[in-house]
Image (cartoon, rainbow, N blue to C red; front, side):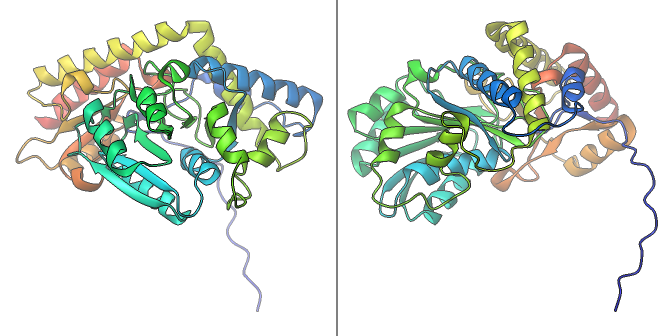
Length: 375
């Protein structure tokens, strides 16, 4: 039996889209132009030099001196898995702060590596106090404390100041999800004592999806070197990847060179703007959005003091079909926003202002469209 020849596909054309959901976001045209350059070999001397530049740029946006700071070939979930795969051995205690959908994903992943997983929980949209985290560390004495700094499902920002000091007091590593904060929210990994962090390319960094920034402190590297068992995930084993991203430049896998072209350009744009200016831009545009939502009679789900500037959750008013609003915005105005996940499904909209898309004209366009659709 032979497979019949399919009909010839038509040239690829895409509808216009303003991506104001939880990600991905639209990429800066300069990033897309960089990605269109011809691919070169993943061991080419020029490409190896570019890898060094990406590491330096990532250290800047994370504010860390960690030698092992790289972009993992894979989306943000690959970065999440890399943090756990390298420092968790069967039987290790892992304490996860669960305040939304991605805290549950950390629990799931850590369990698959044989960890004894314990959870601290908060209602979706709230955050943990230092005292609550200290009590959890006192009770469970984990090897790793995992927290989501920017919970994409709720729009809440978990404060990290003082948490690293607590982890050192209790002899554990601090692992942090910065998927929806890197590039858009102040982060000081070294100052705050963060040992492991990961992110993604398609949100605050303003690049298409496909790469996952990853960083590991010397404390975490020491735990990796003292493992009693091999890292269970070959593709994400930092023992191997460190020898590709550093000396002796040993082949590991065929890196997605065009994606890294784009990431380099996206990070360069942040340097050009200035990191603090980038953070301030995200905050200013978020506040413009919050004010406009209030004027429309809409209520944000998260208390303002813990609200993310990159991702806002908006309560769906009683009697409004939230899914229909999302569909109308996409069909009539080519604007994408997101619905709720998990416990917040059907209760909130999620609006992202990240990277290149965090601009006042986008805020005003969305608010005007929302006003018309809700009428």
